[in-house]
Length: 106
Image 1 (cartoon, helix red, strand yellow):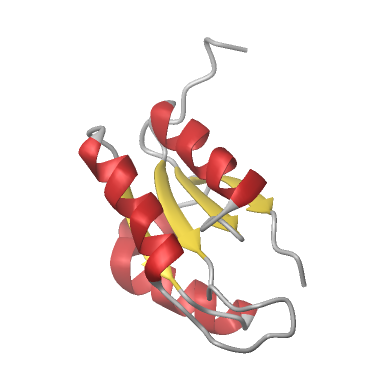
Image 2: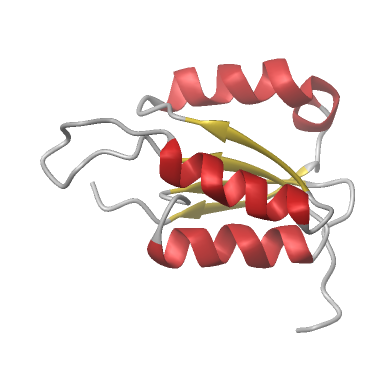
């Protein structure tokens, strides 16, 4: 497992601001993936959006030399549109999205 690498690949991780989603994002980044940290940071009832947790994960990945962006999308179409704007060549080329980790609680 340690030999699996994701250079030139994009990993989209939902619920990546905290918990298991955060760990997925950090692991994929450590293995070379450009990570989309998607987490609206809401409470269990969907209230109080907060970009802080997702931004913290992005900063941690970047500090370690990785590539990451945040997305606070709750709608799949909105999410993919934002990813295409930020990393269009990687996402529109077949085979470049290496992983989609769905770790959200809703």
